[in-house]
Length: 484
Image (cartoon, rainbow, N blue to C red; front, side, top):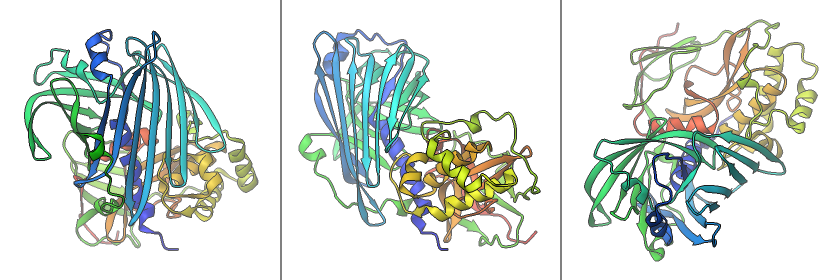
């Protein structure tokens, strides 16, 4: 069977959307800020627009609006719309959030809506102290859960005057936890004040306050004017926001440059020939200030030299590992305990003689029953089981739910894999049998996965976004091509 290139390349788009959501909406928890500063509230009470650019083309916009709700506080509306050109087809993406804020700008509740071709997501949440209780609907099923945060949430818009009120000097940093409504997770971020900087934006020179935001190795630059309004913001994923009047921001390029053409990682050194090999060596060049644990499981890192050894599958009586609660858990996007997931595992693998056989049966089922096509959205097992379509992300989420359902500890992992002359960002799985983790790629139908799979992160979308720090900077050299 041939594998369409977009099956692998689409992984980048999911990272792109998550990063876009991170820029669109952050809920900061900055303990030192005086939340009752009336001037902050007044400066944020306005309607504003920002154009979204990719490779110098405006492909979308963000609209922000803050309104009074009487003595109860405020209501914030943030709407974003963009067109993504994927394989020369225009894919519209629509994200909208409505949030209620207390009189001192604390987040009280929110509703989040996301739609794209073949995908729809709705989430709503309520803040109770340091806890956010939320529900998530991605299809016919609604899931309820909660997350705990370090501090009470306070909502940030494109006006961040509060940062300028901190009396920061160049080099000063603020550690900031935030909540992301797309991945429904919290992360720590660090805001560093870089001082004033002259910057050219649309043929005009501005003297702005420069902030560098860092989280999970990803660096996002933003420039604020003296009123705290964000004039420009950019990320390593290749897109940027520029403050503009409405008539400009909403004048969109319906079919801009093809996005996926920019995400491959060319190889250097020998040609990659994996046939008959059980070991492969690569020299990696990684961007500075990144921290990936590459020296584990089948990978061994020595300096910048990475050796990958193909796992030898265990015997037929191999048993699932014990004491891996996290890798057996049901999550909002990997619905391990879902009734339909249970019915499928019982029907397909209920008569299997061993855990090894269950892995083989379930991985074959996912490979053979999913139509391989791009889906722009956060992958979840239940929706994928219903639609029977998806790329590597959907394959990995569904297999994880199925394997965990029968008691096999399973990870979702992400990194790169080789296809058609280059490396592409990709997601696959790992299962634990007899105290050893084995790679499983249900998109390629490989168990174990071939030696071109280089793992960088473990976890769902909130962890996979760390791979974005590699975009445009990762270099891979093939060291030897001798059979071993």
